[in-house]
Length: 275
Ligand SMILES: N[C@H](CCC[C@H](N)C(=O)O)C(=O)O
Image 1: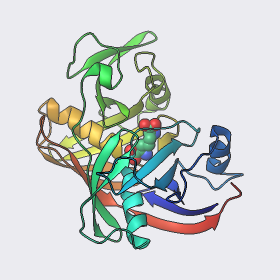
Image 2 (image 1 turned 135 degrees about the vertical axis):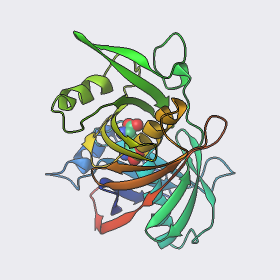
Image 3 (image 1 turned 45 degrees about the vertical axis):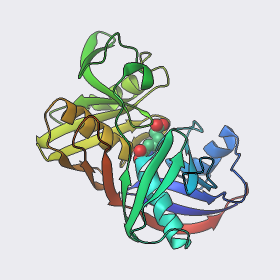
């Protein structure tokens, strides 16, 4: 099986051309492929496929390094768009809809290594995240053993918890990340974002990803953090989000509008994998 190794500010992917026939890899094969010592190594596997929805130009599938599926991948869809452009299947500056497991997103390749994406509208309704809560709120107390933390909860097509912290180097986050990711109130687990508010137009973020652990960047995590804080009135409609691997731009005017994420997409190498 031929693959392209790509990354979105350090969140890395194996991208497979499955346009002729959908990719069907068992979770253990995905885990083997994602292994950083005995496999290719990646945070997620992405397949590029023919669309199921006739209003979309392509479909793309997402699997985490642990073999679990996801509904959306912000850094990943930018890489898929850049991959399609390099394959001659997507022109520069041509807006197209790409279908994901959670629904369509709109992509536009601004230059061969920079893509802007209409990620759709953030979803705060608990049942659709999914997150167990009696009513939708801007913050929820989350019991973690003997302590409780305040989180925001939102879906960008995948579930996110967002926790505001003063110091991203706090060693306590190492344990908090997995605890929040696996919290039983998130029935399908959650990507746990820890965000420091620099000012109304600038955030710093680290994400403990469901199915991949701490990553250098999480595109839907950047969208989720901005959306939670915008809904609380704590950030403006255009925000720079700095993650360990680099910077993303997130734009959202508020409820009733879709959210846009813009950032890099890079190729690392091509290879063959015994499927
Ligand atoms: N771990 C995520 C999928 C990858 C998301 C992330 N890599 C991004 O760029 O959005 C999940 O299970 O929902």
